[in-house]
Structures are given as C-alpha cells and as structure tokens.
Length: 390
Image (cartoon, rainbow, N blue to C red; front, side, top):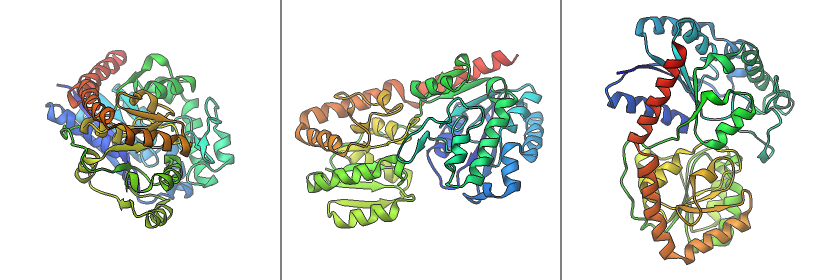
C-alpha cells in the first residue's frame, strides 16, 4: 500500500477545496493507505498585507524545515499538495525534492498564473496575467483581496517560483479537474505531459433523490463571480412559478438577503451542513450554477449528479464538460438573465424530459464520479509521479 503525505493550507472561509482535501484523505485511508497530513490554517484573510507574512508566502522557511523533517520520518511514497497559500508556500515542493519524494499537486484554481486564482476581474473573465513572467496586471488592479500590497506578495511568489523552476520541474504530476483547466495551464507554460485529469467526487454515495421539493436551488459562495446578480435578475421574472432557495455565505449576503425579502418565493437559507445541503439537492427540481468565472469543478455539480438532480449551468470554463444540454441539464449564456429565464421556463414546461434528466444524471455519476472510479484514477497518477521521480 502506498504511503501518502497530504498537504493543505485551509482557507479562512471554508470552501470546496477544503472538503475535497478531506475527502481524498478519507478515501485513501478507507482503502488501507497510510496517510499523514501537514496542515496550516489561515487566521486572517488580510494577513498578506503584513510584510513578514508576505515574505513567508514566497518561501516559508518554517514550513520547508518542518516538511523535510516529516518527510524523513514518514518516508511517504508521494506528497500530494492542495493549497499552499499563504502559510505553507511553494517551498513545500523543494522540501520533497530534497528528500527525493514524488510530488503531485491538484490545480483547484488558476493561482499559478493569476493572483486571485480565478481569471476574473471587474465582472468578467480576465486572462491578462496568463503567460506573463510577473503578473503585473494583477498588481495594477489589486486583484488579490483588493489590496495592492497583498497582490504584490502573491505576484512575487509566482514570479520567484517560475524563475527557479518550481512549477516546470519541481512537481512530478499535476491534477487538473477538467480539460478546460488542463488546456489553460498548458497555455500558461506547464508541461502538458505532467497534467492528468481527475474530477472531483462524492466520498459516500448519498443515494438518489426524489426531486419532490418543487424548488430550484443555488449552493455556493455569495459573491459576484458566481453570477448571483444574474440569478436574481432572472428570478424577478420567474417568481412563484418556481421558488428559489439559496445556500451559502459571502460578500453579497446583504444584497441577496434584501432581494429574497422582496420576493416571497425566494429564501436565503445561509450556510448549511453537508448533509442538509445534500438533502436539499436531492429534493430540488434543479440546481442552478450561474457562474461567470472559469470554474474548475464545483463540488456541488457532482453532488447534484449523485442525487439525480438536473443542472442549469452557464456555459463557461469547464462547466460545458460537466453538463450535457438535454441529457443531464441545460446550459445558458453566462451573465445573460434573459437566456437563463428561457431555459428555466423550458424546464418548467417539460416535466417528462425533466424526469429523464434525473435518471441520466444519476447514471453519469455512477459511470464517472463515484469514489471507486476516482480512487483508481488517483492511484494511477501517483504511480506515474513515483515512476518519473526514480
């Protein structure tokens, strides 16, 4: 059995990457692998404004030394990196390299090229930093947490590790969540031969839902790049024909709360537990994913497929690979409230097709996104990483 060291810097506000990290650790443990962990947690979302913390995000000497010691004591076959910003830093790659340990890194977002990690600025996709040695447009526009100081810290980290070959030669294998993500990282300069595709998954099969709730559902961060304003403009027209429930929290919470208060058929439920969210997904008539940024692989999509819930998603980034119009859901033009309205009205008016989509969605999950299928793919990537490190 392989021994794995899993490395992750938790986000200040818990999100999908944190849950993916935990699910992969538990998946490996459930199959009998020995998994050790190196974890850090953000204490403040604005800590990169501090010069000392900013320097540590480029190269954390403490993380480097602690990881080397842990690698020596545990002797894992592979180290699997998830998020390293800001407390761990890419020095983790060099710690593994010094100990001749294979390194796999999951590309949950576009952080290697984009300071805010989303290729998103001023309400639309932005690739101004893609391919640039120093992502200076991000600094100019204060793209990381709307702080030029913090963005400069992230940009310095990116440029430093591009210069010393961390991304190109230090990592043994990368995991992209979609073909779209893979293509963008290749365009940015990562070696194509090092990037495999492994989607997100659901660790424990939640079982198929019944879709009896009679409502549409949004699950995710309440923030502009997620398309919340487009969703709200649409539901001003949908109204009581299909109630809308919203699960999550974020910077647009006050705006979304005011919107929901003015439309009786809309309810802002706030953050909920994983089990509560799954129950709602299974009862929903449809999951709405109105993102206007390049999503990697929203975990909520695979949860909807597992529950057999049709998905109405914007056709942007990798989402077009995950939802097939007329089969598992419907796609609409990102940011286009009128097009979203037309697609929702079509779904309301075709209950027979809706039922077939439920069956198709569940089948799609069983074929592509089960824990067992994910486990086989993950082990194959680990094997490749180990082989190329010998």
